[in-house]
Image (cartoon, rainbow, N blue to C red; front, side, top):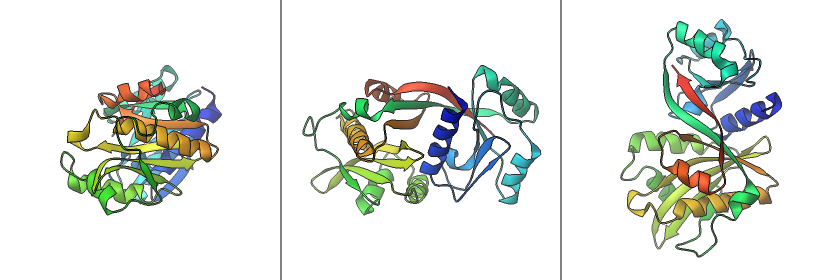
Length: 246
């Protein structure tokens, strides 16, 4: 992948989770935030080849904010010098996660209104029921509330809610930045999984992104998350796997 494409996707990824401060330094984009979302409080390379240096200025940027330095690095061969440098400095990898992309036109045809359940509504801001579902049974309520607060800051985002009667069954977030639609915060109530709600949210997001003139969607999913199969079925493909080095 060309360096410009890597930079575009990484900038869109960080913008979508709205860190309180973002800086670019020495070939890295740094999310400076104390929230729960790793993408908002880690540094990612803006190009893979040649690899950017791991400089003291990166660690210093986090120290100035009172934050521990964290690096989000793809496990690609060109970045092996970065990985080696971090390992030698005492950082350890965790949370392997896939970066996936798809065309909005492909994903928009994944589900149809009225098939197997209610179609999502798209909100300009998360309401109380949306937040309650995000933090509901099966999820860590405190951590969920912090994620809701962070995602609520995403500029121009849409918040999907699949609802039946007075209950919200599934939620998600669509951000927009740098000509890319970013998908975040996909959650379905435990007793509603397997009912197609997430697929309909993906399709609704793809149609909204297309209406915004965005042809590309991006998301991140932990390597062990079974939702990865759903994303593949919807047309997403893996670009690279990254690890958090902390």
